[in-house]
Length: 490
Image 1 (cartoon, one colour):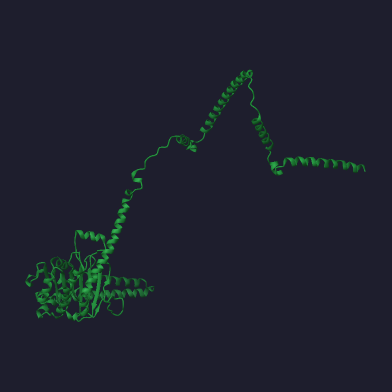
Image 2: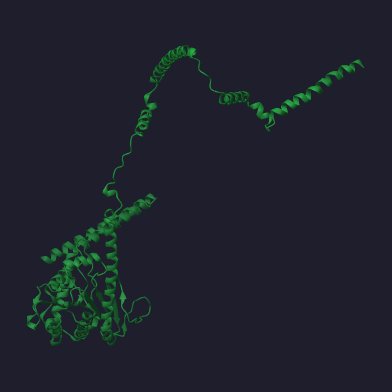
């Protein structure tokens, strides 16, 4: 029992102590704070003490000053100033020590510190507002280049639309005035060549904004007729500006291809002096068969502005009959050139590019070039005025078909063509020799390669001997020809 009492006494003491401690902790945590927060804030007690002292200082009345205490306070102030001076000296010593320490380090590591201090002082200075320069201000004067570019672009677009529409109107006006005449003389008018079978479309074929084509066929004695309307580049603003300095006119070019049996052998041309000089220099047939200078047409009553190129006088007399002279005389201002040729092959071949070894192919052709009146300021009525010239083209086709040279003229024409062919062969003889030599060398090279590629030595030896025998035979043949020439000469 005694042991039980000894155990109960400590138990009762613990029970009595537990409520007391519990009450104390409950008072400390009335605000709802957690125990963990209280343990973590180790300086909470000191903060409470500071708050209490501040509250007392605010509520306490100001202390009364005792006159007897003033001298003591003055002495305290003197001591304080002395202490402050000593402390300043200490600070100065510490600053010098810091400067000594910083002087040991590289100055480049502390770049910008002085600038920051200077900027700090400069921020205190008053702001100075400068006026914006004129070239930086937003005004129309700053965009004069852009304005000029946009204006030029708009002008180019407007000129393109206007020029393209005008060329289209002129082409349509020409076709409307000539359509009836063309349809009455040709079975097919306006074939565009897109379909396999020839179909008459009855309209112009536009190649680009200033060139229109019209193909006609289905007539006696001619394979076909190609009409090309070459207008000025009215859609190009630069070309319009260039024509202000050098005016030009629109042109109508007609090319008639005849059958081989429907034209005799002759070359003839009539046109302006400038056009004849240019064609004689550029065209292959006129330069070879009409070597003489252009002659005046006053004999036939032609204006002085027109000249004639002809292979022989008989051809001129046969072509320039009364009706032909009438057409040319009444429309001399619209005629640029008229060219009839059975040896037409186009412009000359450039000698620098290498002369061909064969004569160019020729066609029996009639060429007409007409100038549209107006010198660029063309109207639809000017296109209608070209209708009589189309009648002249139809008449020329029938005239050339009927024209036949006499015996002497035929012999002279054949002699001229033989002369031209002989001159051509002489000019190309050296080139033909070089080409033949090149072919022989290539043949020998191929034969040597075949012998070298032969693996069997015996077969290779036989091939070499055969090649040597062939070379020997060629040499003997040449020697026999030389002996025969010498015997004939004797």
